[in-house]
Image (cartoon, rainbow, N blue to C red; front, side, top):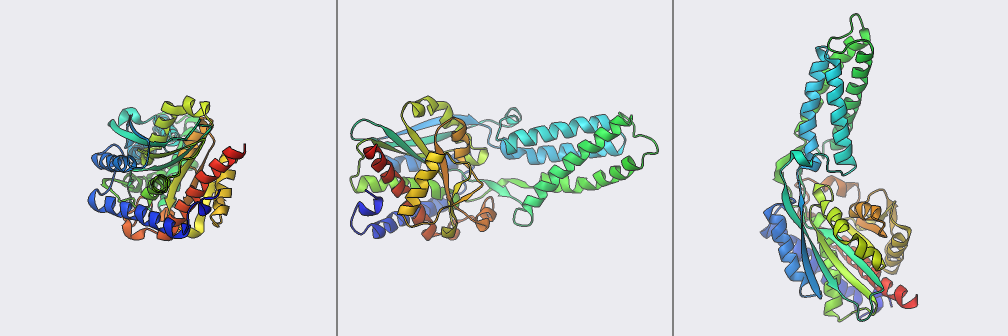
Length: 399
């Protein structure tokens, strides 16, 4: 049975659950405010959602985990300063020192920001976040588990993002690589602690790198750790997942062999730390029972519904068919979110999102507020997720 066949006047009911999700988002933004990972407002939000989920789930558990919330983005000020020092030292001929500093900078930026590692954690303050996990059990033996996961935290403000933020990061990386190349060349020419004499290349590059310090200085202020943002659209994934649990409870649906879970993860904007904690705690359990994990990202642009390009084939096919049942076009785009972490653990997973270039510009800015919500996109997300869990039940019954 499809979700849209489950009750009379289904479309009208979905709008009710959409309004429920939107009201929750707006109220959190109004009464709680921004929710940086590991801070009090993230905790308040998850406690609130946990109490709400107790109305619709059989069990709700809270799983704390440690994280270093500012490490993932902390590379920007830390290594901008390091690169300024590296370039100034290169200007005065200390090629070997400049080479070492640039290499360290590139290593940490790559492993922390791009690969989502924890190499910078020891240099930043530790905090505690949590994952809230709600479970609606199957009537009989659990043969399939479907997990819908959004997150509760919001990002710090990304200064300059609207005005060329991507270009700023790209120029930072170009500057690091240029410094590395120049330092290697200088050292090869004998310029360990003194610039090679009568070398036009080194002479020109010295001034180029000195000028590049201006770009590094701007990058140092790229993240505004004093101003977290509302992150209203970031909450839509969690609330759409909760709306599914409410729908199942309100309409007394309990699948015969499918367990439905809603997860409100923490620490997503601190480097997907909640997803990593989930894998650590539940990897073996998820492999013992057939599990599919659906990460739900921002639901902001109805015309841009998509599944991530590297999704597990089974999870991707599930979402595609569910979207088809909901009469929504689902394209494929290069993004991952939590499913990028879950997939590495060998669990079938995919990310559902409804975001365009305009949505990307909202992230990390003050414009990501309650006024920017799209009821149509949230409704589409709730619809696809409902079709997803009903499709899981249908496939399990027909297996």
